Each structure stands twice: as structure tokens, then as C-alpha cells.
Length: 68
Ligand SMILES: [Zn+2]
Image (cartoon, rainbow, N blue to C red):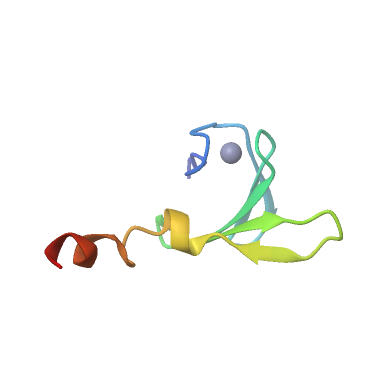
């Protein structure tokens, strides 16, 4: 499957695991479920992962705020 980075729209994506991909352009890691990106992580300098789901996973958060 073709994965496009949700952060920078780069197609320069490397596969690092069964359902995991890595963007060589902006250095984020993605977990894929089916044909969708289920999680996005930023890889910190110490190797730990920092979740970016709040920013990139559209199912969460955004719409409700406009109804307040
Ligand atoms: Zn990227």
C-alpha cells in the first residue's frame, strides 16, 4: 500500500514493521490499521515516542469545538 505522511505529505515513507511506517522527511512514525493511519508518533532524540494523534487523527476532537 502507499502511505503518505499526514504531517508533510511526503511519499518518502519507509516500512519499519508489520504495520509501522516511518517518514524520512519529517521523522515521524505511523501505525497503520487496514488502509488508514491509526496512530502517529514523533520520535524523540532519546528514542522514545511522543504521540501526535491529537494533531493528525481526524476522528478525534475537532468538530465538537465548533458547536460550543
Ligand atoms: Zn513526513
